[in-house]
Amino acid sequence: MRKRFARASDLGLTAREFAVLRRLDTPQKTQAFVHGLRQNFELDGQSCRPVREVLRTRRAHCIEGAMLAAAALWVHGEPPLLLDMRAERDYDHVVAVFRRHGRWGAISKTNGIGLRGRDPVYQSLRELAMSYFHEYTNRRDHKTLREYSIPFDLRRVDTSLWVSGKKNCWEVCEELDDLRHFRLVSRRHLKAVTRRDPFERSVNRHLQYPRPRALVEKMQARLKRRK
Image (tube, rainbow, N blue to C red; front, side, top):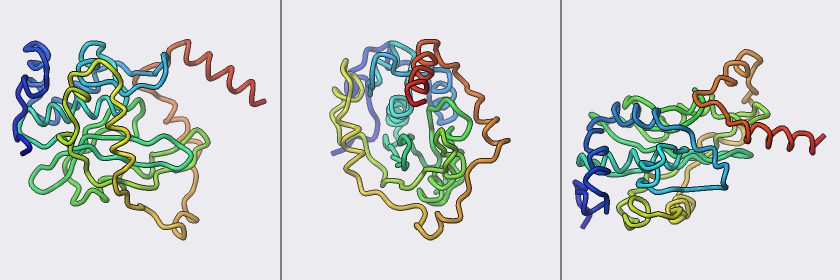
Protein backbone atom coordinates (compact mmCIF):
# COMPACT_ATOMS: atom_id res chain seq x y z
CA MET A 1 0.00 0.00 0.00
CA ARG A 2 1.40 3.37 -1.04
CA LYS A 3 1.13 6.01 1.63
CA ARG A 4 -0.49 9.28 0.68
CA PHE A 5 1.50 11.43 3.12
CA ALA A 6 5.19 10.88 3.75
CA ARG A 7 6.45 11.38 7.30
CA ALA A 8 10.03 11.97 8.38
CA SER A 9 10.29 8.32 9.42
CA ASP A 10 9.02 7.18 6.02
CA LEU A 11 11.72 9.18 4.28
CA GLY A 12 14.50 8.47 6.75
CA LEU A 13 15.20 12.17 7.27
CA THR A 14 16.06 14.08 10.41
CA ALA A 15 13.55 16.55 11.84
CA ARG A 16 15.64 19.42 10.46
CA GLU A 17 15.82 17.93 6.97
CA PHE A 18 12.12 17.11 6.98
CA ALA A 19 11.26 20.66 8.08
CA VAL A 20 12.67 21.99 4.80
CA LEU A 21 10.26 19.83 2.81
CA ARG A 22 7.36 20.73 5.12
CA ARG A 23 7.87 24.41 4.27
CA LEU A 24 7.55 23.66 0.56
CA ASP A 25 3.77 23.33 0.74
CA THR A 26 2.98 24.54 -2.81
CA PRO A 27 4.53 23.72 -6.18
CA GLN A 28 5.41 27.42 -6.51
CA LYS A 29 7.43 27.37 -3.29
CA THR A 30 9.09 24.13 -4.32
CA GLN A 31 10.04 25.54 -7.71
CA ALA A 32 11.50 28.65 -6.10
CA PHE A 33 13.52 26.49 -3.70
CA VAL A 34 14.83 24.34 -6.54
CA HIS A 35 15.79 27.46 -8.51
CA GLY A 36 17.64 28.70 -5.43
CA LEU A 37 19.89 25.65 -5.35
CA ARG A 38 23.24 25.99 -7.05
CA GLN A 39 23.78 24.02 -10.23
CA ASN A 40 25.52 20.66 -9.95
CA PHE A 41 27.95 20.71 -12.87
CA GLU A 42 29.20 17.21 -11.99
CA LEU A 43 32.84 18.27 -11.81
CA ASP A 44 33.61 15.10 -9.84
CA GLY A 45 31.82 12.82 -12.30
CA GLN A 46 28.25 11.91 -13.14
CA SER A 47 25.86 11.83 -10.22
CA CYS A 48 22.29 11.07 -9.21
CA ARG A 49 22.41 12.18 -5.61
CA PRO A 50 19.51 11.48 -3.23
CA VAL A 51 17.43 14.17 -1.58
CA ARG A 52 19.49 14.20 1.63
CA GLU A 53 22.69 14.98 -0.30
CA VAL A 54 20.96 17.75 -2.24
CA LEU A 55 19.77 19.31 1.01
CA ARG A 56 23.26 19.01 2.46
CA THR A 57 25.15 20.49 -0.49
CA ARG A 58 22.40 22.85 -1.72
CA ARG A 59 23.37 21.85 -5.25
CA ALA A 60 21.48 19.84 -7.90
CA HIS A 61 20.96 19.12 -11.58
CA CYS A 62 17.72 18.10 -13.25
CA ILE A 63 16.96 14.62 -11.86
CA GLU A 64 18.32 15.55 -8.42
CA GLY A 65 16.10 18.63 -8.28
CA ALA A 66 13.15 16.60 -9.59
CA MET A 67 13.53 13.98 -6.85
CA LEU A 68 13.63 16.67 -4.16
CA ALA A 69 10.52 18.29 -5.63
CA ALA A 70 8.76 14.92 -5.75
CA ALA A 71 9.61 14.29 -2.10
CA ALA A 72 8.14 17.67 -1.15
CA LEU A 73 4.96 16.89 -3.07
CA TRP A 74 4.67 13.56 -1.26
CA VAL A 75 5.07 15.19 2.15
CA HIS A 76 1.99 17.26 1.31
CA GLY A 77 -0.15 14.37 0.14
CA GLU A 78 0.57 14.32 -3.59
CA PRO A 79 2.14 11.40 -5.45
CA PRO A 80 5.90 11.79 -6.05
CA LEU A 81 5.85 11.55 -9.84
CA LEU A 82 8.71 11.97 -12.31
CA LEU A 83 8.44 12.47 -16.06
CA ASP A 84 11.35 11.49 -18.30
CA MET A 85 11.90 13.28 -21.61
CA ARG A 86 14.26 11.67 -24.10
CA ALA A 87 16.32 13.56 -26.62
CA GLU A 88 18.28 12.61 -29.74
CA ARG A 89 22.00 13.49 -29.74
CA ASP A 90 21.39 15.33 -26.47
CA TYR A 91 20.83 14.77 -22.76
CA ASP A 92 17.51 13.59 -21.32
CA HIS A 93 15.57 15.86 -18.97
CA VAL A 94 13.59 14.80 -15.89
CA VAL A 95 10.92 16.87 -14.13
CA ALA A 96 8.55 16.33 -11.21
CA VAL A 97 4.92 16.55 -12.34
CA PHE A 98 1.75 17.42 -10.44
CA ARG A 99 -1.92 18.16 -11.15
CA ARG A 100 -4.20 21.06 -10.30
CA HIS A 101 -7.90 21.02 -11.26
CA GLY A 102 -7.26 18.31 -13.84
CA ARG A 103 -4.29 20.04 -15.48
CA TRP A 104 -0.62 19.03 -15.41
CA GLY A 105 2.31 21.19 -14.34
CA ALA A 106 6.02 20.55 -13.80
CA ILE A 107 8.81 21.48 -11.40
CA SER A 108 12.20 21.60 -13.07
CA LYS A 109 15.86 22.23 -12.30
CA THR A 110 17.79 23.65 -15.26
CA ASN A 111 20.46 26.19 -16.06
CA GLY A 112 18.73 27.76 -19.05
CA ILE A 113 15.47 29.47 -19.79
CA GLY A 114 13.80 26.88 -22.02
CA LEU A 115 13.52 23.85 -19.75
CA ARG A 116 12.22 25.51 -16.59
CA GLY A 117 9.05 24.55 -14.72
CA ARG A 118 5.55 24.74 -16.16
CA ASP A 119 2.32 26.10 -14.68
CA PRO A 120 -0.48 23.52 -14.29
CA VAL A 121 -2.39 24.40 -17.46
CA TYR A 122 -1.67 21.36 -19.66
CA GLN A 123 -4.46 18.91 -20.38
CA SER A 124 -2.18 15.91 -20.93
CA LEU A 125 1.39 14.83 -20.31
CA ARG A 126 2.00 14.91 -24.05
CA GLU A 127 0.85 18.52 -24.15
CA LEU A 128 3.17 19.30 -21.24
CA ALA A 129 6.12 17.57 -22.91
CA MET A 130 5.45 19.36 -26.21
CA SER A 131 5.80 22.69 -24.41
CA TYR A 132 9.51 21.87 -24.15
CA PHE A 133 10.02 20.97 -27.81
CA HIS A 134 10.99 24.31 -29.31
CA GLU A 135 13.58 25.22 -26.67
CA TYR A 136 15.02 21.72 -26.23
CA THR A 137 18.19 22.09 -28.33
CA ASN A 138 21.76 20.83 -28.38
CA ARG A 139 24.99 22.76 -28.92
CA ARG A 140 24.55 22.56 -32.67
CA ASP A 141 21.16 24.27 -32.33
CA HIS A 142 19.14 21.23 -33.41
CA LYS A 143 15.79 20.69 -31.69
CA THR A 144 16.33 17.31 -30.10
CA LEU A 145 13.34 16.33 -27.94
CA ARG A 146 11.77 13.09 -29.20
CA GLU A 147 9.93 11.15 -26.47
CA TYR A 148 8.21 11.41 -23.11
CA SER A 149 7.46 8.69 -20.58
CA ILE A 150 4.51 7.60 -18.55
CA PRO A 151 4.78 9.14 -15.04
CA PHE A 152 6.97 7.20 -12.62
CA ASP A 153 5.85 6.97 -9.00
CA LEU A 154 8.93 7.16 -6.77
CA ARG A 155 7.09 5.19 -4.08
CA ARG A 156 8.15 2.16 -6.13
CA VAL A 157 11.76 2.77 -5.03
CA ASP A 158 12.94 2.37 -1.44
CA THR A 159 13.35 5.78 0.20
CA SER A 160 16.68 4.61 1.65
CA LEU A 161 17.97 4.90 -1.92
CA TRP A 162 16.46 8.08 -3.37
CA VAL A 163 15.78 10.15 -0.24
CA SER A 164 18.02 9.30 2.70
CA GLY A 165 20.85 7.53 0.90
CA LYS A 166 24.45 8.69 0.86
CA LYS A 167 25.40 7.25 -2.52
CA ASN A 168 24.23 7.92 -6.05
CA CYS A 169 20.76 6.55 -6.70
CA TRP A 170 21.24 5.04 -10.16
CA GLU A 171 18.24 2.80 -9.51
CA VAL A 172 15.91 5.70 -10.33
CA CYS A 173 17.72 6.37 -13.60
CA GLU A 174 17.40 2.70 -14.53
CA GLU A 175 13.69 2.69 -13.70
CA LEU A 176 13.14 5.74 -15.90
CA ASP A 177 15.04 4.15 -18.77
CA ASP A 178 12.79 1.08 -18.56
CA LEU A 179 9.53 3.04 -18.66
CA ARG A 180 7.27 3.06 -21.67
CA HIS A 181 8.00 6.15 -23.76
CA PHE A 182 5.91 7.77 -26.49
CA ARG A 183 7.11 9.61 -29.59
CA LEU A 184 6.27 13.30 -29.71
CA VAL A 185 6.84 13.93 -33.39
CA SER A 186 6.80 11.61 -36.40
CA ARG A 187 9.80 11.37 -38.71
CA ARG A 188 7.75 12.96 -41.50
CA HIS A 189 7.06 16.04 -39.38
CA LEU A 190 10.66 16.25 -38.17
CA LYS A 191 11.71 17.07 -41.74
CA ALA A 192 10.01 20.46 -41.35
CA VAL A 193 11.73 21.31 -38.04
CA THR A 194 14.24 24.17 -38.30
CA ARG A 195 17.35 24.96 -36.28
CA ARG A 196 17.46 27.92 -33.91
CA ASP A 197 18.04 31.27 -35.55
CA PRO A 198 20.87 33.67 -34.49
CA PHE A 199 18.68 35.61 -32.06
CA GLU A 200 17.57 32.44 -30.29
CA ARG A 201 21.19 31.31 -30.05
CA SER A 202 22.24 34.56 -28.41
CA VAL A 203 19.40 34.40 -25.89
CA ASN A 204 20.29 30.82 -25.04
CA ARG A 205 23.77 31.87 -23.91
CA HIS A 206 22.28 33.47 -20.81
CA LEU A 207 22.58 31.02 -17.92
CA GLN A 208 21.15 31.26 -14.42
CA TYR A 209 24.23 29.69 -12.85
CA PRO A 210 27.65 30.63 -14.34
CA ARG A 211 29.79 27.71 -15.43
CA PRO A 212 32.76 27.20 -13.09
CA ARG A 213 36.20 27.91 -14.50
CA ALA A 214 37.21 24.24 -14.32
CA LEU A 215 34.28 23.26 -16.52
CA VAL A 216 34.95 26.05 -19.03
CA GLU A 217 38.59 25.00 -19.32
CA LYS A 218 37.54 21.38 -19.83
CA MET A 219 35.14 22.40 -22.61
CA GLN A 220 37.78 24.55 -24.31
CA ALA A 221 40.30 21.71 -24.21
CA ARG A 222 37.74 19.37 -25.78
CA LEU A 223 37.11 21.83 -28.62
CA LYS A 224 40.84 22.14 -29.32
CA ARG A 225 41.18 18.37 -29.58
CA ARG A 226 38.36 18.26 -32.10
CA LYS A 227 40.07 20.87 -34.27
